[in-house]
Image (tube, rainbow, N blue to C red; front, side, top):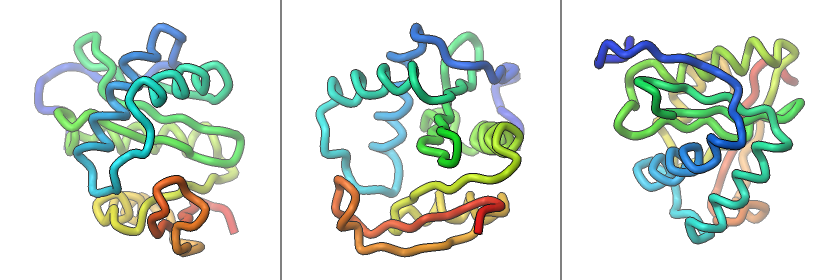
Length: 153
């Protein structure tokens, strides 16, 4: 579904100036999503993401001059894909995932919480497959999760 507010969505590489808005999208999306609560205070998440912007390939989705989503990738992993709750269901997540596929044509994997049925369905609709289920012992939240992949065995 296209964005409903007639604003064009621009995808662009993130810059250091995007750290605060990226963190705001991340935190709001986590709180609104079907996933366990985060285990770090907001200021730690903000600092961690600011550091990741300097290392990982990160793209933002911008609408009406505001960051409304982002995707963060390493060479083989899609580590984050979040859309602001106010812009969910408007196709921005699909745009960001399509960008990740274009940037990583050989494939990538990601982790998603087992409890996050909407995200799992989203990724399945876009051709990702479930490869591994865990009991959550290796994630900070200690919640069951699963590895999904696109074009990776």
